[in-house]
Length: 266
Image (cartoon, rainbow, N blue to C red; front, side):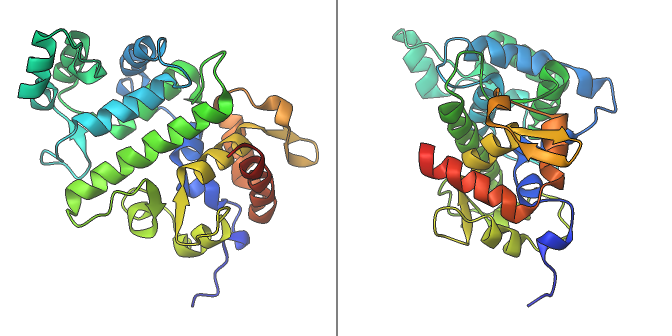
């Protein structure tokens, strides 16, 4: 076993593993990344969806829509994916409205314009529009919203991995092999999983555990004495400042906060 410990590094395991935390710390380098059109469409759908933000419904619909890698090394949506299936057409004929944002007229135009839409495009659009990862709308229950985001993010990750490996068990939990499919982590991801455990299993991260860390990250603030957790700062948006503070926070201390959130809310 390696002598490496994730506590030897400033980058916390939660920051590295959870896209809802680390994506908020990214920088938009190109004009294409500054496009907010994906999130504008997603927010329109999310307006009438309780405890789900735009990025949550976008990830949900991405997982429902994507069918492959289309010659790339990452899962994506192309125009053919946005065509209604036979059963969707039948449903519309009988008055059942299709609510997949990528299969709406606006969504089809958006995909055609972009050529392909990747999961990273969704996160970049969220950053451009909200300045971070907005997992809860104003007035939403942040705990339920965090859980819904966690479920959507895990499902999108697992759907992509399943397309690459048909033997993948899509069980709603982040497992080690799935982490390696998307994260850039120089440390020991196995040890990170073990140290982040809240629910008993050291081999995976459940949506409820993910949501607990998301809330913990949301409450992270920078002070003169370093990063601190302030429950009053939780507002449904993981900002760059939240993300950076979480990155610097000690893993064992972050786990203690997340454990309390988990025990009290999930």
